[in-house]
Image (cartoon, rainbow, N blue to C red; front, side):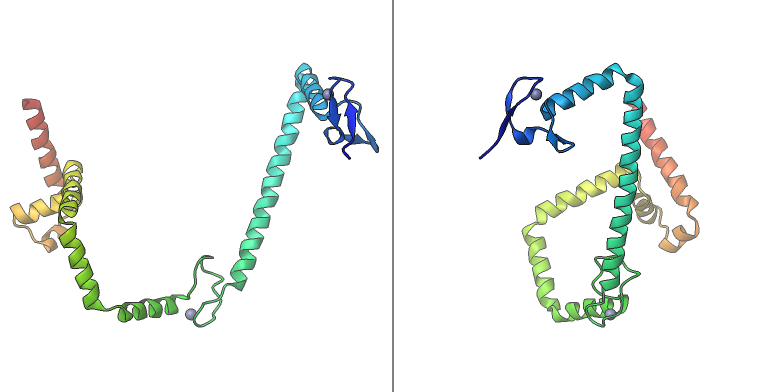
Length: 196
Ligand SMILES: [Zn+2]
Ligand SMILES: [Zn+2]
């Protein structure tokens, strides 16, 4: 059976769980009245309110620090238990989601690649391309457009190679060519817009 009690503040009949227990006795006013009272009292005592807020801030930051330490401890414990799924070496110095040590990871990757039928993959890839030709073209032209708009390195380099006859090596040796070309393109575009 649920016990009830009448709050002396709001005069409401409330379940006993709505009252705090102090010194082994239920308080005369209910929890919400106590809380509201406390709030009013704090508002009337700005100095106390300030101190109250500061204290709770300190408490929260201390708590956060403790939580962080706890989390770190858990991670360290998990890392200590994390072993390579193939050779069993410890993966302590690696990220937690790592399943294999670097050597085994490489082996695993090669094996998966060998297992997969290369020709079959190629066929699927080609089929996909054929089916989605229009979509891929649109995507490529969009990419090309942004490259053009942003005068990206790749775009400038392409122009230099295709229109000015530079080789990749020449461009690598003279990176300033890219900068000069970029400025030329910008000037050209500016002239065009000012004419319009
Ligand atoms: Zn009440
Ligand atoms: Zn391993």
